[in-house]
Length: 128
Image (cartoon, rainbow, N blue to C red; front, side, top):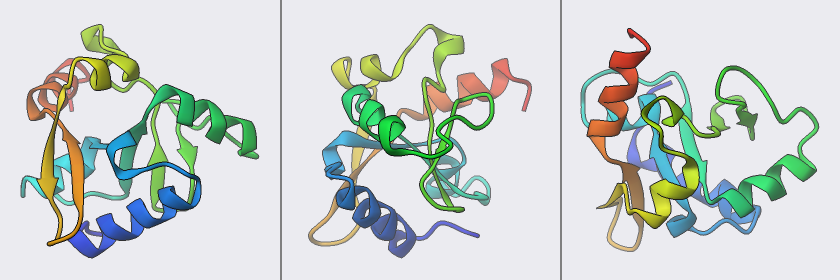
């Protein structure tokens, strides 16, 4: 698939349709690794604030897929649940402890990415 800034904007636009604002989204997983230029992502992985995730779970036909209980918004966009639990960190902590950085996608749009250290730690723990 490949993740470019247009793809990230499309993902943010889709999440906005669910009343999820840009500052309530953190790009994680392979998406972060592609943003950093380390590898190609197969899809877009995000976490959202826990209250927004509960809303998505309530309206999703098939809310739990895979180890991270992903909600597939589309075939390319997944909302993960607690992907850093192996480090003892839940989704809520990613927001309250500000475990993310904000990047500029274009002149009008900013997005949050998880701290790379968390993603690398997860990959090491899972031997990937």
